[in-house]
Image 1 (spheres, rainbow, N blue to C red):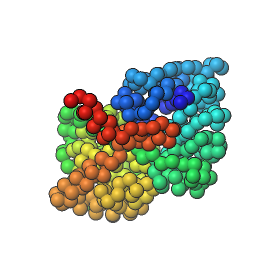
Image 2 (cartoon, one colour):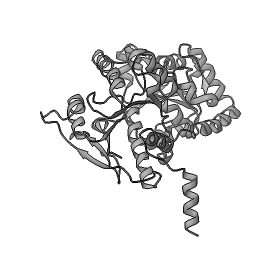
Image 3 (spheres, rainbow, N blue to C red):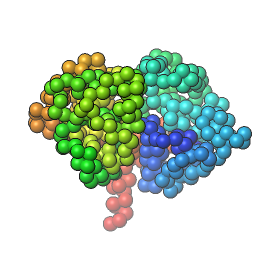
Image 4 (cartoon, helix red, strand yellow):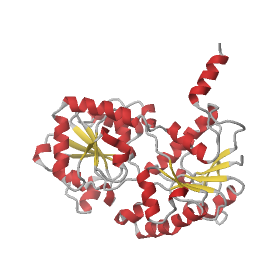
Length: 380
């Protein structure tokens, strides 16, 4: 099989949810190689990034290279559209972060959602125009378009990115959070009590819909609980944009994986009020850690969370108040949701995603149970 090159442009910036998917999927793909789960001769696999890459993936078999752009512009769009196709000229190029070069002869691109069409207010004009220009071209020129849910597939077809027969769904995994030991004392050092707070992502993007949680926690019925927001967006930023932020909202800023795990493990619930999501990774991350989730019945959230999460209308703060109180007042419900959440989230693993990717690109993937049985027989 021809060599494989993963587009590593995502390594040039601070990680986002989409970048997390790329990094975890590449690492899981390497585990298939290390654990001999791919039949036949292994292809040469490389992650190619600009010289400005701030991070280096922890890989052993997969090669990592940095290469600049001849004009002295080593990052962003010029590198991806001009230099990357040359680096991968004789290889299958896999782009996992929504974008890729339009003039590469053999590419796959993972387009996570159609948010630039569904919620344009979440993005700048330049960003929207670039995505609306490039993604339909990728849909026409790529061997295959990948996406992360059936919901996203429907939206990509609806907005003319690619026909349904050219789109393959590969669900994200969420089991990466199980590899992080929760940071000891992180919760207590911030004056939070176990079960006394609800966690959510801090974001000003329109579709993240944080205002419904602000309105819910302004209700006196939730005055004894705290809404804890993690992420770069601060109270000052929200207030400067005209949001009314209640006093019982706490901002903890950017935190690492161990701190986020600690925050979720001790929380009453994780709240995701988004009006649309291409997948919805944070609720699953919470669920696999045993933290009940409350989600809006929008986008891919019902598809992903199933009946293992509570639901509340994204435009009705009263429903969020009622679901939080229902959970706080019912220990049995908490226990049932923890168990159902772990079971549901456990279906979404990076190894499963990597196996699906390998099959899509034409590699034969061995059945792990058969391989394990064969190994056990040889060891006798």
